[in-house]
Length: 164
Length: 164
Image (tube, rainbow over all chains, first blue to last red; front, side, top):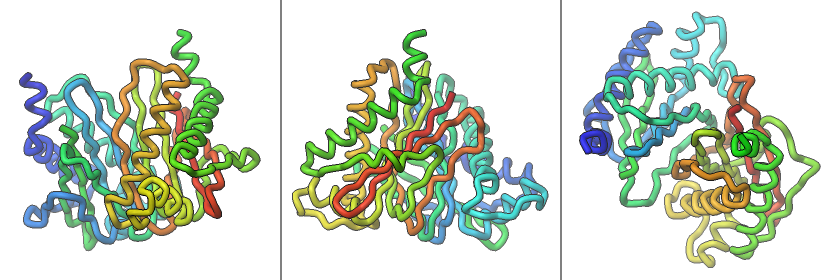
């Protein structure tokens, strides 16, 4: 029961993910600043051009974690992660895979820190588009949170959707 | 072992999904014609404005199923599914949830017909955008297939990504 409680408390997940994003970013030489006052329920990620989403399923939990990036923050991560070798391009798989790797690393670290065992994590699914949006589920048992970060002059959004 | 074999054979999955999409569409009064000759490896879904993606995980399998729709086919499904009550709008959750429901129904039917037990299915994740693209994973152990369908004058794409 303790395990289930842990998972259904969004605050724990949120804190673990925020810390994980900051520390993973730091590890690749990027300062991601959490803009706490702009945290929102629902999904609000204006200006996003790319998204990577991971689904986490297991006996006690079902939720998704997505990173959505505007062009500036996408460029910052691709540039730092590849030491400038790869140019940020939303139509290029190599470049897009950087966002997937960051999402993997953030989720991995967050789940270790939240100490949630027995979960199955899907590989990141990568999307691009102009005015890219994730549409929140209509179901009342789904809680979505958008956690915004400043990355250089751009924005990165961490979107968590928790299914009760 | 038989179970694992069943899952890692993309042909089985492909056939189950094609049949399921046709029959689910038929059930809501839509003729979806499989354009077999345009089937492609990789992800090729030009003109897509919306996407719904489901992750399927379990002991023996890990794959994703996505429906990508252009505006015409999206309109056709929203219109038929809601008997014209809801106007197709990629920025409206109600309207977008139709694509999610169709994806759920197609996946449910396909997995029953492919007789794959013990799988955990994530809720559909819904995306919209102009020039919406799903970026295929770089990993060599992932096989992606795009199965195109004609729906009225529009196109619907069923994208399967199977992780070995």
